[in-house]
Length: 255
Ligand code: F6R
Image (cartoon, rainbow, N blue to C red; front, side, top):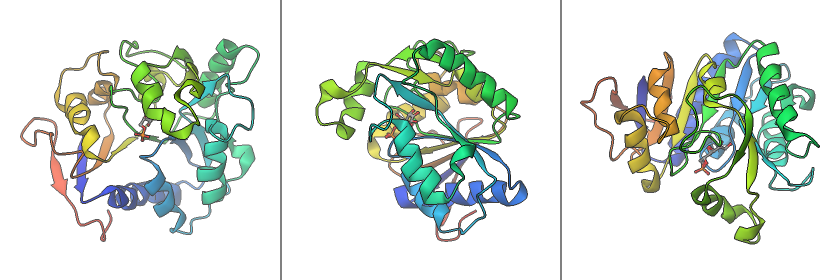
């Protein structure tokens, strides 16, 4: 595992975008796994300035709410359309998000898992981390080998995401999420974290035991993980703890 610690959230974007750009340059039809929420926004902003040819890049979102009408501005389908497809210039036919408004979301989840496999798997999966250690919407207690499925959102997750809705009660209670086993099949995992409020959970995930109580801890078992954290989020990491190595980089240089 390689960990880059950078000054601030904008710098997480610069560094992570540099890594993604390198993948796309070497494989113009790369399959990216894309995240939503606040953490990846600086990454997409920085990536858009690379001026890459993105028309053959394929993208699969991590998750989607169940129960929002198609086209709801806070559905991840819409967020991905705005922040990824349009901002980065992907072809919409190459971008997929789980079908949260499908009549049978369980079938939609299974179909999504199969679609990722049929695409040849994900080359690089971008991830954020929730305050309770979730990645995608694999809440604490999720099986470490779980597949894409319908899940119930934890109260903490609904609270955190209430900032995107008019009222906390409007946050959906269920979602379709890639499973931890699905995520672990991606060839490269790139976790971005910023802010003091992520410091404890980031340390638990990277330095603590691998346990379903902290789903992100499963990353310790993946052979190719890069973490890009700002200094606030990295504040509780234990630099001496094998296998974690912290390198402070000058974000203006990139990697
Ligand atoms: C989003 C996702 C979630 C977020 C996590 C952190 O697609 O899967 O796991 O990455 O909730 O969200 P932010 O970045 O808003 O703190």
